Amino acid sequence: MANGKHGIASDDYVEIENGVINITTTANAAKGVKANDYIDMTGGTITITQSGSKVIEDGDVNYSSGLKADSTISIRGGSLTINSSAEGGKGLNADMGVYVSGGTVEINLTGSGGTYSQAAVDATATGSSSGGSTSGSYTVYFYAVASSGGMGGPGGSSSQWSNVQLYKEDGTLVGTLSTKTVSDYTAYYYTFPSGTTGNYYFQGTYTSQSRPGSTGTSYTCKTATFAAPTSADAYYRPGTYSTSGSTRTYTLTTWDPSSYQPGGGGSWGGTTDTDTQTFTCTCIKCDGEISITGGTLTLNATGTKGTCGIKTDGNLTIGNAGTTGPTMNIKTTGTYVSQTSSGMESAYSGDPKGIKAEGDILMYAGEVYVSTTGTAGEGVESKSYIEIAGGKLYSISQDEDAINCSGIIKVSGGWVYAVSNGNDAIDSNYGRSGAFTITDGVVVALSSKGSPEEGLDCDNNSYLTIQGGYVFTGGAAQGGGSGTSSSVGSASQGYCFTSSYAITSGNYYTVKNASGTVLFSIKALTSVSSNNNSLSLISAPALTKSGTNSIVYGTAEPTGDSSWAGYIYVGGSTTNSTSAKTFTGK
Image (cartoon, rainbow, N blue to C red):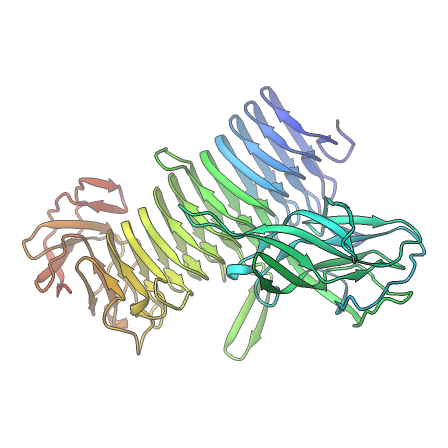
């Protein structure tokens, strides 16, 4: 099965049930275990050690990976350890899905991310040409993901097509397409025989990302036509789209060709220039979905730049409701790979993140601890939607948001503790009603940065919805700063915005209602200075409306009817009695 470069390589699947396997690879872009189909691990002990550099060949960029599957990776038991110093190295790397339900996984990446350059064509297929005759066999690659920011992805996220087929312009089916890895992404492809003429289009199916308790909407996706390539391989991805009922029609744009020169009657425009791409060292990477429902995972990406714990172009699911769920420890260090600036704003590429999902992040059970220390390194980020329905999530960032989402953040159960020493602790950029919603569970969000950073930032307090649960935030602002509402958008229980009191790291803070009943307590894991006009949002089911509630503090650990020791305590009692603040509930 070995081919002299990879440790274990199979043209089909790989199943690991028991035994002890030690693999060392030093070749560039080598794989510890490689399968053209799936990898399934149910037992045994595997240790993989890797080094080496990336490889760029014919526009295809490859990196070393501990486990690499063109289909899925499943880990249901056993012990897997991956230690890699490879440039752009990956731990688990799958095209379609990564599923961890048991076992022990430890991934330590000490390599770094970076950039690479290749020729790029600035062009758009117009579909107006009848196409010339190919002078040889050329392949068209179609990266069937449309993202927002000009690519027309729904919901502000990326949309992965399935069942992609190639049709002639007159609607005649050519065939269902296979996939292969191109520039570290999964692309559909078709090789046109010599002498092929005519125009063609791609068609596939996309199902919108669903929220818990609902199903997504399915669309038939079609692209504009393109001429059969006449002198070189061609690379496309969907552009913007228009919707009519359940059909979406996309434009086509070129995508990362190594050297494409049109010929023979194709109607192409544009010029060839240099396209610079960034890459990261990532412990778990997938173009599709990632589901981690059990097991113990330790993920460390500690290179000097471009590091990431988990990265997916699809959804990330953690735990199953009613189960213990996984235990995950994620740590990244280093800085970003590149930076672009426009006025006062900066954009980063290859920034070190703990968890990054283009789709939804859904947590139902388990304990997840995320720490990022590098510049521009967010702890947990989704471009679509975050819901914490159970389990315990702790995220700390030294420079950026601890938890960030382009869409809605919802807490419907579980306990969340977010700390930022460089930006907002929790930040929703949804920008309208419901941006942050809590119906159950506990949320603690502390930012020590100072003005204008917040414990909980959703642009305006009127976008907040509180229908249950416990909330304790602290920062130099609350709800978007000046001009924000002094009331939340919707609340079914007591709450209050408090100001001008200090929170000191290491102390315990307890919220009591007007009757002196202990509602909940937290341990401060960072400090918030009163000199920064500190602002807090406090809420609890038994908080007294129109009455005087209080916050007391001290160094003695409180008890709790339920607790997350060292983080949060609900109910219980405290011996601490020093007053931090009194406030009137709304």
